[in-house]
Image (cartoon, rainbow, N blue to C red; front, top):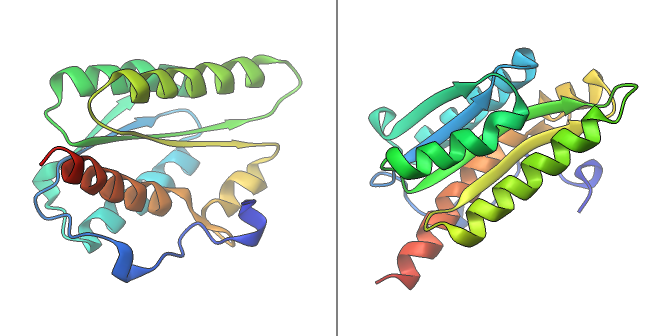
Amino acid sequence: MATAYHNLSDYDLKSVPEANTMKFGIIVSEWNSNITGALLSGAVNTLKKHGAKPENIIVQTVPGSFELSFGANQMMEYGDVDAIIILGCVIKGDTPHFDYVCMGVTQGVTHLNVTGDIPVIYGLITTNTMEQAEDRSGGKLGNKGDECAITAIKMIDFAWKLNK
């Protein structure tokens, strides 16, 4: 569903499992830090709202969005977490760089999800303008960080139910 028809921060509270025993890794891009910082705040606050302990939320930064896949892979290997959230922002410019970065991150995260043992949640905002990014990082369309946190909690619960 297009974001224009759904606020990223809206969800059914009753559908979210308790996160008090879950461990989360968050990899956040330093590029467009005004956006990624807001995404990070949204994700961390939402995780805590659902019971995640601050010591069970491990945040690491990478220089840009293209490095998110590597960061997630390293967190998967060495982070002792139940899910990983990647947070980045790529804004379209005048060159095809946007397409390559977005495609690379998307393929990298997909690869980690199909080959790894823990979910990697895709929190890469890809927009045409800074205003669109601001709208999706706490503005009029909500915060993608909130959505990613809820998805991480639900995917951990999903995996745990299958592995019992």
